[in-house]
Length: 267
Image 1 (cartoon, rainbow, N blue to C red):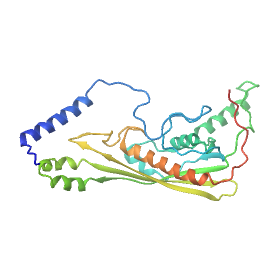
Image 2: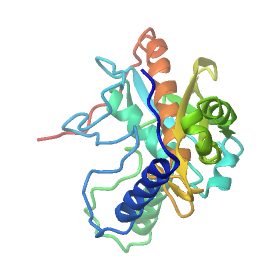
Image 3: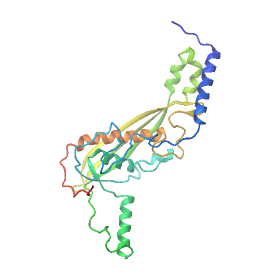
Image 4: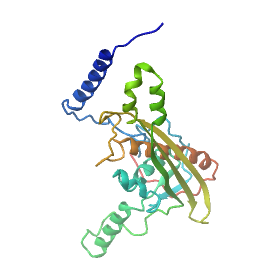
């Protein structure tokens, strides 16, 4: 059966589509808690992993304490998307949610600890302070993240496909707005006792950004001022790290557990 669509009907369809997008974009602003997140979401702590991705692979028990280190030359490409320069906080959340490691802080949290101990040495903090030297836990493993590549690919194949369909031939100009965003990352795991790299994994992800006449779906548009949860560029990188972490867990499960320091008391 052959359906004929007039030029007028196609124009009406396009006009309605654009109008719908404009109304959505210009509608009343509303803040919704817990919405608009990426693949890495939720929390971790004494109550366990809450709200974590359903695809997150977990361990039955932690095998070691873990520190994540910055890799300043490992993801410089993030600057072109105006994204935060470090994905480490999200990877730390993944590591804690998975239950494979007990995560120790070697970043801003550690600097705060050193500052508190310095204040105590200067006599500024009370004498019976609960913050004492010599109580810190060692990092038995170190994890290093790396962003291998992240790029956009024009949807030329989609343009050609639309051009073959008479009814959709006039839409080929919009197909140029379609891009595929891809990312590949790596995670390296080092034993701090022996310096041996004991595990490594790569992860990848792809997302499709559908743009129409300057408007776009899925939060595209360059990612200006964006964080890790509201642009396709960011979300695809986060999803790739989740993929890499899941693959690394398969290797971690085979490691013999190290002697762990005592756990922090909870209620």
